[in-house]
Length: 225
Ligand SMILES: [Zn+2]
Image 1 (cartoon, protein in one colour):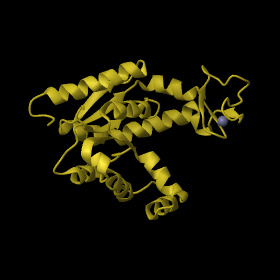
Image 2: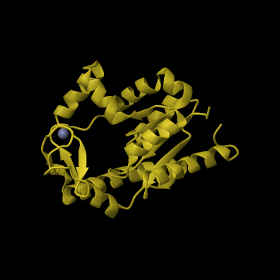
Image 3: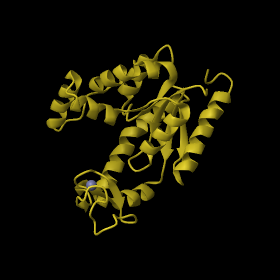
């Protein structure tokens, strides 16, 4: 079997990060660890960590680094990720998180940080055309609407544009993301861990590009074990 991998995937909203993480996790047979999904799970199961997180979010505040890292530590400490690695999605978001992740993994380290690059104009267009079912959350787009009159194919609910999906709001979110992520990208670049991957084109094409850079790293002497 292919060796596993310890990977962080960065990418702005609409860059196809979630899709690529799932594909890479299948390819390398390692779990896709999404902090968003983990968090929803913790909240739903009302774990002590989930209850603490909910309290913070209900106040409209951002989750503190230590809470995020406690959750990530728990997940990365499980047997499957210890044995083969992980595709980490949604963390780190800040340099303190990146430092904490480093300590968490020691004496091992990340193999690579992939930055999925898609031009802002392109994701802006993609996100602004997005429509979503208010009842079940199924995604549609202006180009691929439901079969009947903006009524969800899955559940019959109403399909609308989310309030925070206007072009102006999206542009603001993308701007915030870039501002927040720039120092992180610099930090991983300094440590020779960051590799940009062109995120445009079909999902298949992008996955192949990502696998190629991972394998190139593996093949380089003195890099991946
Ligand atoms: Zn629906």
